[in-house]
Image 1 (cartoon, rainbow, N blue to C red):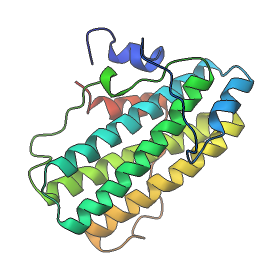
Image 2: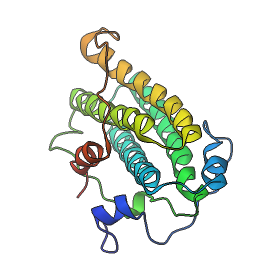
Image 3: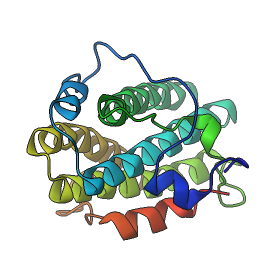
Image 4: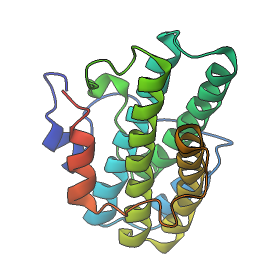
Length: 202
């Protein structure tokens, strides 16, 4: 985290400064109007901040993975597509906060850290991708269960479905079986989601 905002402040109050995002044409473009229509509860705003943090982790991880130049050509293309997905997801969940009149955090508000050797090989990158995607899926499953604004929860479920596709992809790479897990989760509530994400924050 930078000197202006602690991890606790990031998750409980949101980022300070910066410009509100103007987003159009995203996968869940209705989130901002729904958030603006009625005041969101503190619970919902806190969950939205967790999802923003999760997406920032995903964006950073896939960016670093591609830059490491350890993936073959086809996997690099797949990672680029997943990165594009995560950027769209970020834009969508950030709208929840911007629609509520708050400023969503950006990459400038948080520093990411990964286990030693994460980007040393394609195998280590793929292994960490599976872990991160499982966390991200858990964040969305928990958000759908915990979000009080039903209209937004339904939109978050569509992002969760995309994250489940990512989990299945990396599971296939590891085991050859995309259907090995009947319950790819588990859902992460606010406390467990923040704990899981905290591992990747300095």
